[in-house]
Image (cartoon, rainbow, N blue to C red):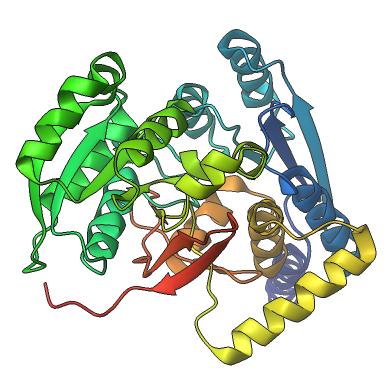
Amino acid sequence: MNFKQIVSTAVMTALVLSLAGCAEPEQDTVTIAVIGNEADLYPGYKDGTEKAAEDARSEYEESGLDIECEFYSYDGSYEEGAAIVDMLAADESVTAVIGAVDMELNKTAAHVFDSAGKIFVVPFFLYDSVFDDNHYSTVFSMCNSGQTVGEILRRAAAETPARRWAVCAADRDFEQSEMNGFLQYTSNDGIGVVDCVNIYELEKNFDGIYSRWANLGVEGVVIFAENEEGFELLRQIKRRSPSMVCAGDTAFDNTDITLNDAELTSAMSGFVMANEFIFNIETDEEMDRYIKFAEEYTAETGEELDLWYIQGYDAVRMIADTAVNENTADPRRIAGVLHENGYSGLFQDLSFSANGKLAERDNVYTMFDAEGYAADYLLKDEVR
């Protein structure tokens, strides 16, 4: 073999290897772990993750990538959840992890998984500081930030008749971020915040604080509750003033509680709520597509479609679809593409800021009717 033949053979060999590298992913399995305490999960959420994995496996059967998805159940304690986080971080086969409901656990998990080079998707609320104070490259939020929730409720408040508002919030970082979003939103909206109170002080001294509100002429109250304590406060407020406009986040989105209590169902009438995640139905066409999907879901499962099914579905498909489209199971490469391109899923278009926060500006709020059911409303355009 002469020199030219040797060079030619070497070039051809390199080309073949290069093409083979383009055709075959470095690792042939995308492994997605879903962490959750089943007692705390929203209706349909787990089913959504499982259906997403099933659909992805079927669609991508011949892609060269296998899609594996496993649910890791824990008892709700931080200790057991953290043990699962550590186990998954040490498992080299794991590509991505979808977080639990617990904000404290997810705060820890974000640090652990980013350090381990694994994608961590947060489909529930999480402290704004997790994103603002860190430079994680593989952590993604699918939910509105606390600051954004507060801003949405401030904009929605401006669309109600109430002008003089009181704000009450829990001590936790997330609810404080919500409160700041409500207070700091800069707009000529005619809203005046005339009182701020700690939610636990309101619980202990409801009569005294309500008397203060009466003297201040409070017409609306926004409640940033940590858990279910907001329901009893709402009940008390409406007993004193049935016309008081009340608002809050998805801590109030619990039909198991509200629809089984006639007084609460009545108290929730007219309640204004900011949603946890963005749901893209803004045109008649999108609404028709959603109605068709919901009807097919009910026909197949016998259950009413809950939006958390869609959130769980998109959390898994976001990883699987991006991996297959890029022909890679490498977490950092998948994360880079999500940062660059975002993800268009089932009734959701997601894009992410450099620190992993959801970048979309939510333009929807929810209002409950006298029967306890919710309808979504587009916020009016505002000049900031």
